[in-house]
Image 1 (spheres, rainbow, N blue to C red):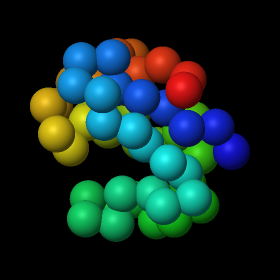
Image 2 (image 1 turned 60 degrees about the horizontal axis):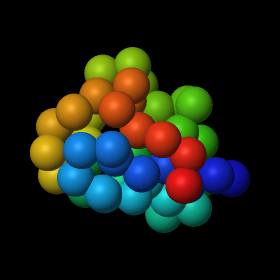
Image 3 (image 1 turned 90 degrees about the vertical axis):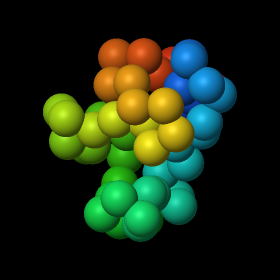
Image 4 (image 1 turned 180 degrees about the vertical axis):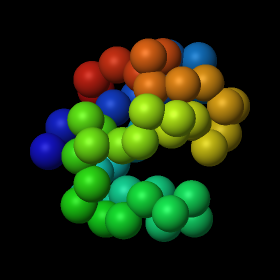
Length: 52
């Protein structure tokens, strides 16, 4: 699975790790994140992420 990086702050979403602190289970692909997912560091939406 591909990693995605926040264009604003550089936080990396790694699907193998997920984002358990925010209810995203390990193994969740970026494409499968909820539409209202936001970067846990700076709060921007999925549209502000790029493939790493």
